[in-house]
Length: 87
Length: 180
Image 1 (cartoon, one colour):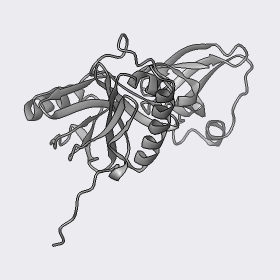
Image 2 (cartoon, chains in turn yellow, blue; image 1 turned 45 degrees about the vertical axis):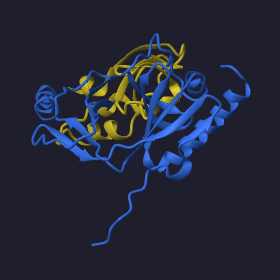
Image 3 (cartoon, helix red, strand yellow; image 1 turned 60 degrees about the horizontal axis):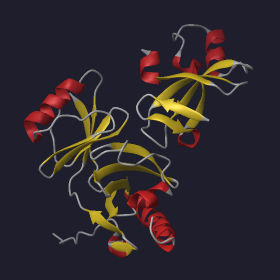
């Protein structure tokens, strides 16, 4: 699998560390209630299909990247700096 | 006060020559990482221009003014080889003893690095003053082309001996094959 880093270009998967669902970028408000926080902290879907993950380019520039990919076909659709996706 | 003896990061591991490839230590006594605060990149660039006579290079590039270099080192971060004052504009951190740098030169240098680095470092795509973060074997490194047959490899200082070990193995393998 090859992942396109917005800084470094297309790189081998071994340079990246998988961090988890990009839901981590959508932090609920402090007073959003226990259900919203439970979802944010613990509950993850396990889709067969399109998914948005956070990856860390640890063997490269050190950027956090949101990778949109398909877990069935292994296609990587697009990548974006987490910094830009979150703001 | 005690007089301390300055030692290079590589000790007596360098210089090292195998076949037509040579590694030598590059000594830069001061190194500072510069990480501009959000939205301050232009101001940081202007500050460097005033203080050092060079601006921030683009992603994947190095710039030099005399002996002073400014090199992209990662996401929103650069490294400069001279002290700078950028209060309120950037996080500036002393890295002088943090990195070990060597220069690897020779006719077969690309063949040696091709055994270790998963990047196309040939001169058609990776030109002088191009720099990249990647892996050399298992080591995270910063690689910069400094000449037609010369590269600089920067690694965290604690990994200096591992870097020389990996390079020596690849240099021996390439030399054993004869011409590259």
